[in-house]
Length: 270
Image (tube, rainbow, N blue to C red; front, side, top):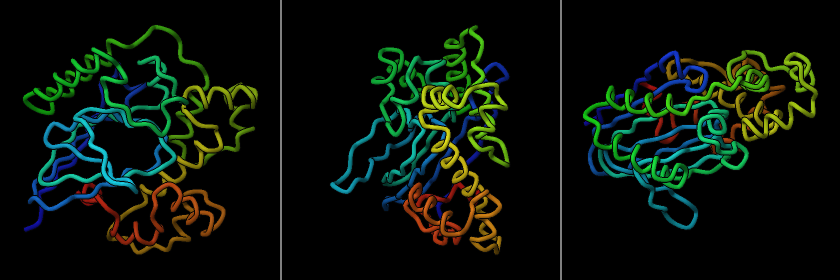
């Protein structure tokens, strides 16, 4: 019997749109066999709440038990996780500059890390986890988490580099670093420093990660497109450059991913 898969996103309230890209829910009803999920390099961060079942991280030396609530910061690496049976996850997808602005956490220090919420936020994190775990439904989780994040908003103006980061995340065509600095009225050195401070990576690395993310979004199980076409559509110079970055950021040759053979990809087909 095929597992029942539920995946959907929820837009944030207008008050949080500068820092929250979306809320999301991922549920699978299935048997007790192992389920492997692979997270890949991403320029944005996520707060994740496992309200039904938990995952353990799979490493080269064994598994590491994970808790119910954590932050998965922006990353240039991939991770693998395993669980058994059905599960339910609620997440909030954050722009990386939400970490320093809302939580006073250095984006650079957080990059490639996955702390639990109590480690990240202390008593506040523990109380938030309890509220999210005991909430009666996902709409209630949206309300709880929105209220929590709104309480963290500050009246301070956003620095210009935030708009440069936002551009890299959303633009279809990415600018060279020097052009980006000029466009956002920053020196190249200022742009480099602010990207590390607010996005956790240099502009060059961050652009590579987001180009990879744009490639992931090209997935369509019914499409018959060559890797060269996908590479050029996403701004890669050639197919070999595309393959090299894809393998570095996902652990896969892109041919495996685009044939629908990636681990934990069920939500892509919903």
